[in-house]
Image (cartoon, rainbow, N blue to C red; front, top):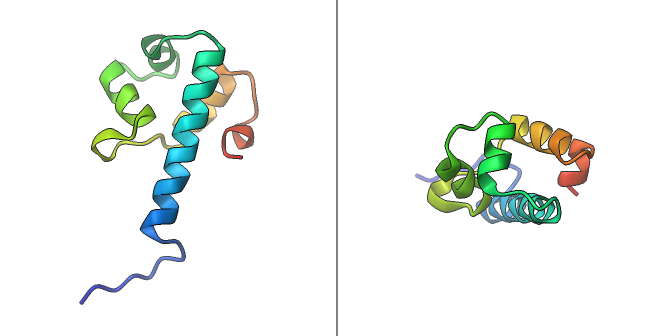
Length: 83
């Protein structure tokens, strides 16, 4: 039996992660930064992990701590990344 007690579908969550990742990638490019630079600035030691989050590979995505640190790096409020 497949019970779903969530108030959001998997498709909604996937779309949320896609929009967030696209926004982060856009801001990184606007700041003329490489993935490695951003990864190291926010405490991620693996550029591969950062790249996987930015491109939603292997089910990887940014968490709330990443969003906070990225917003700080990009000199913006965290909610601006979540718009």
